[in-house]
Length: 214
Image 1: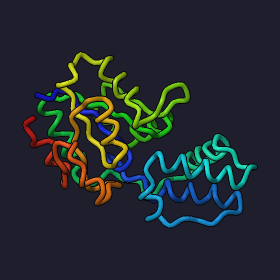
Image 2: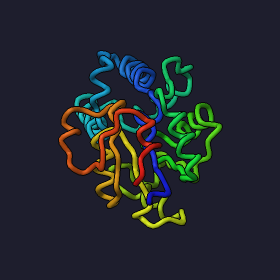
Image 3: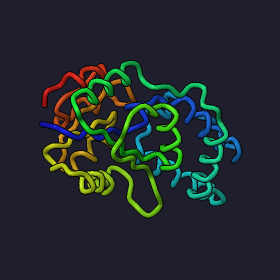
């Protein structure tokens, strides 16, 4: 039986796409570059985003990837984030898991200080045994490093852990970590992601996760 559920964050627990896109476009605008539509951003997986920034640097040598991220972080911290919200049913799901004495953790590619701020704001009533975000000295998903770190710091065997995410990067992360996983359909997943045979289940409603017996 699964005793530890590790969640991706953006697109799985919290809808951050519109406000993230606003910050992204503000940074592009600061370089005199055209804005993107939210639908374009929602289809960018993490690796594609890094490739986009790398290509941007090749076309505009004055733009460094590190400077872009720094500007993005500054914009994100300034923004009030009026469109950021918890997905419908997520609180009920977490309540259901808590009632079953299942431990919770978060593994995200969001910059860790920003991640912790959002967890404190939106999930202050829930206890997570580990909150792992992007930090300079550790590789991001789909590298399984930080996912493995969470498991190694817990008291659970790998077969007692379930990973939950919303896109192909999460499928690859779980696969690389040799973990069972669920793919949720309310985030940034695409039809192509649904062709994967790796997830145990494609979940359409958060409460389904609390009701699973696995």
